[in-house]
Length: 116
Length: 110
Picture 1 (cartoon, helix red, strand yellow):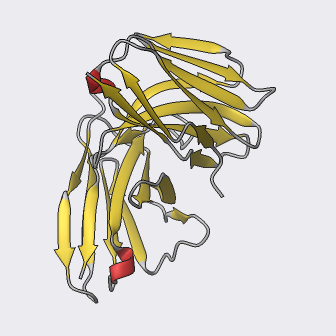
Picture 2: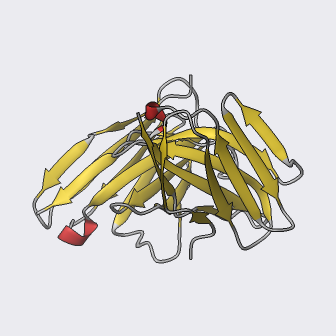
């Protein structure tokens, strides 16, 4: 149980294009979903927290117009990297929780984004 | 800044030995969690320990929490090559801030 999927697993795009990443909880309803980014050999940095049907809460320093998050249902959240640039290249990981951020989070396998 | 600092950054041991990783944090917490990440993959939740707990076990894993020292340790007993991964602590502060630690890269040599 508690499986979270992400799609795509890898994406390569040209600078200036937008990329959408999907995060789905497959066998449970996720009250809250989280988006992280991780640079090589570094820890995860929380980008934003999203609750179904409401606006996402972004961490300090994360541009909400750059990283659009939609949490349309209890099983799906999307992250859109708008007008991507090479510095946006990273590993993006989502997680889902049946309660808040302080409880157990179930992680997706991650999406590796490379912007050329 | 990140909440948790982990020590050591990297650890290499022989199969069968025990591995101990430490996590120190800065502010009061509600709970602390340990996660494991295989290279290039998502994270797997290992254990959650609450601020009023001192020790927890799960299979070969033993986690301790010392809130007076603001530190936690993860012990993996009788390590296996398959335990090779990065291990992260994550804290939920009293103010509901959530941070991952810097991580420990564990290599278990067969």
